[in-house]
Length: 381
Image (tube, rainbow, N blue to C red; front, side, top):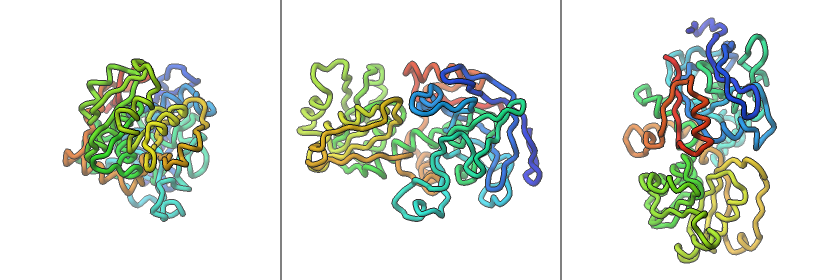
């Protein structure tokens, strides 16, 4: 299934296709088009399942687009390159990027943002360049997800939506950096800029929340409080830096009151990692007056509007949102890869399951049931 970089052709391979909202994925023979100008075709090595894949698959937070190939947190090897691509060549090891970096637009050159105007989050299920798809089944177009679609043995992405990584880094671990783990670390370091000795509260102890905890721990936070309704997460969270565990189901008063009491007036930083806009208000109320900062990372499943009493802001609290932890994906991700290779950050510990591609529906079940952090799906070699 390989092709010449100079004359790439259509590849037929296996992909897990979602034909409808919430329906089990179906292994199909799909045709994957050659990369067009400024695109690359990647042989996917490993891909991990992210909560946002499940949310979009269930179509709870956005307009349903089907049939579709989900997946965006992935690692792979460049199989062929399109016209005009100079930064990649066949055989390069890469991470896919659900939000790209053109390095030329106003946002990319500002130094203030990672929200690329050209290669930002793609929501319509097509490629950035020509608004078409690169997948088909018996001539029927199959839509993309976040312009990545890694639940396929091969995929095509814009060259600005991939980043070259060291060939010595394990691709079966590294895939986690293309979304969840990097997002949490960035929220702690780039967005909140957590200071030594501070107090932190994290709502939601999935992969992103625990990555925030790891970032806070490495910054020297004195107390890191994790809030989650799953009691099984209490012990595991300690390995990532959580010092106190709070289960709202065990409380006889509002969560924010408990947090304010045990932090002497509120935490310095709070992070909403669930995707519940109501919880954003709770996170704001858990922060201290004067300088309390709340960062929201979750993707809402329902009710996207945020409501909060103006007094929370009048007294000095701040609410910030972030995408991908504020990292400029192509510029910054190699730094995180280097940190991992130097054993300065944890990645392996987030992987609770490894599965072959044909068991991908089991991974969805585990994620929906809250029984995994990250399930790494291994493609056939």
